[in-house]
Image 1 (cartoon, helix red, strand yellow):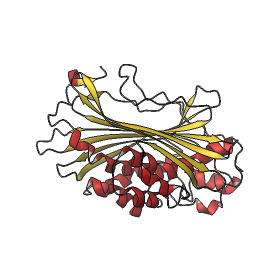
Image 2: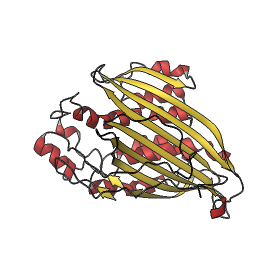
Image 3: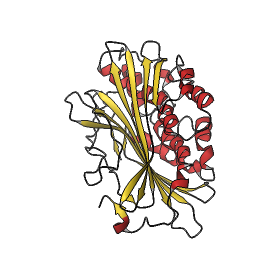
Image 4: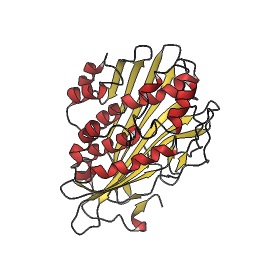
Length: 344
């Protein structure tokens, strides 16, 4: 795990630990990205999302679904000013004017209902992408970096911001969140598997990309079930236009039975702001025994405070969207043989 130190110009051991794996035949892959793009000239934060569901068949790939979204947030007021989606989703009109952070997910659930679609998965990331955009806004001088909020608001909201920890102490001493300078990370795509990720637009300098990958296949357990390999990364493109800096990075490995109930889960923290964040990894064990369909609501209602992580919570929330996608997994388990993997 790579972490930042609690200095005003934070430093880490260079390098991230995760690379995109090869795709076993008979499996499905969901990839999602949200680009966080501040526009000082209009006072707008643009969240540009895209995603795709892909099944890997013998010798070729099948696109099961693809989608995109554009959400504009008024920086000064903090509310959603405009939403476009493809495919078009008329219910998104009800989200215009809603605060982009607090209350947005409740409004999304009311508008869209319980669905594991790509559109709802992209929009579910709106509140936290707005949260992490704060670092970009401070760097761009759009907001006052010395007064982001009363310091007490941050204390004990998660493991990383535990009151006695490095991040909280820096904030209390200086009145400003630490400035991150995380490790340089490599692109997530594989040169030997151009279909491994959906196409994305080029990022402009001083922007952030949130990326998710979730692979799933049939379990080798004689009792049946499925495995899910989930990965998440936030990274920033620096002003030089070439350097990608890691901000947050987690991986989860999950086993579910034939009734889609979680039977085992392991968390692998990689790039994180501070070593305090790693204590949240144990929270994933609370998913064991839950049906996938209940993960999102359970995480939203009970995974709070010290011992949890906002970004790990979101990685767990995304598992619910895999419930319907598991039905598209090839019933024949061929995931274990190297010759049956695309990308070799």
